[in-house]
Image 1: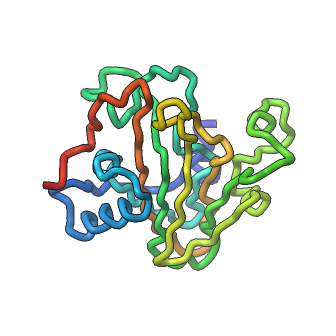
Image 2: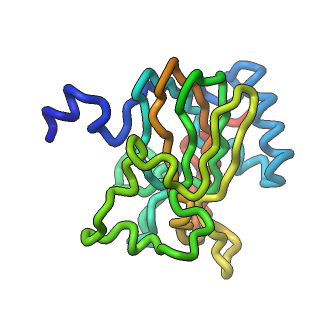
Length: 219
């Protein structure tokens, strides 16, 4: 199977190239203004926005894709630290991305849609989709792109935003993962696709006192 993944990109869960752009006081002014716009859009505390992960820029060539996945880690151990608070990388951590903002940076000649596999689906549950007894590989968006409940074509200059987690009712902080946020990027059929991601991280009630490793300040 590793041989197939090496020789054929269509057998890989993800086929793309990516880089990160820092968003702090040393960032390009364009990125600083973007942080201000995100704060205004989400109405979240500026401290939370400033402590989120740096922007990821992604390029997909022909056949580039990212099969179905979640942006935030499921809560198997609620006390496990969030990766954006994992100072010095000392501990095992989980990804705590409350919100995803995905920007489309170019018009794609063919393909490259963003697919939400089971958005608002009342006929199938995440457990059924992930069952080893399922007869189809719904996660494979090279094959099943247009079987997804919601399919959005890439359009230059637009962005989409969604929530990956619920809010914890007791603390008002990061709660359990919304497994219906399962999504991915369909194959680029012609040309290339450029996108950027802002992941807005948030603490849980167990880690609200821990500073983000990305919080370099904007002053």
